[in-house]
Length: 277
Image (tube, rainbow, N blue to C red; front, side):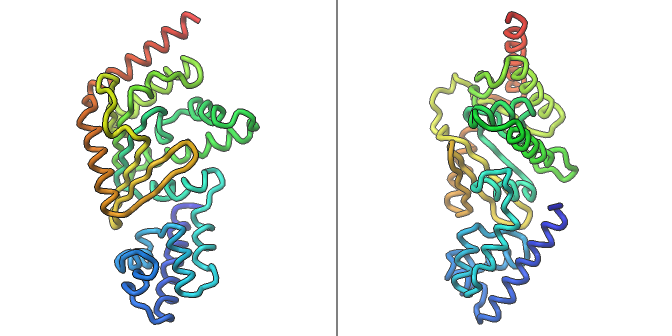
């Protein structure tokens, strides 16, 4: 679904929510209290500024007795079989974000992956899948990354743990190309990249992958992920703690200039490794 038609569909979702809420005799605050969000959030849903999470859509159906209408509509708009269920909504939010900040503890994040790297990661997680499956996942990842090439692209801040530069994914030449791609993104100011080195030891904020997103007219979100699931939260107190953790990571990481030097050095190491094999 194109971005324009997707937005129009969310505007329909919001208009229906407003109509059915008013028909049921609820104010935004009253409905919000029943589905465990603020009245302001209900207003943002109705204006298509923000998209509700699935559990909120389900509670709206229960409260307004709409026979699953909002859950079905949500699933149709959010559901993308190319992504895990828990990640499809994150992809949707990335398209609307004005700023994205990530911490990657072990792997290059999807927005920076090359096709070869993405394919190797997919196969590592799914060694028995077909070539068509791998191609579909790689294509989806590259399409997702196009937001960084758009004229309205978000600010993209990324802290990579040194693990990301050293763990060989695919062959050494593929790793060299992947690191060169990251360097290119940084040099063209499409991403602000910092590296948290081994010298920092076991940093207190290294609990796992973290992504923070900010929006023009909606509250920020935080997303964390493990190997098999992800959690998207917009509770202001939790997002504030996540932001503090990210700030600590940035403070401990190398400067962007020193980080770029280290990334380029690691790429050269992989090239030398390839030439000796």
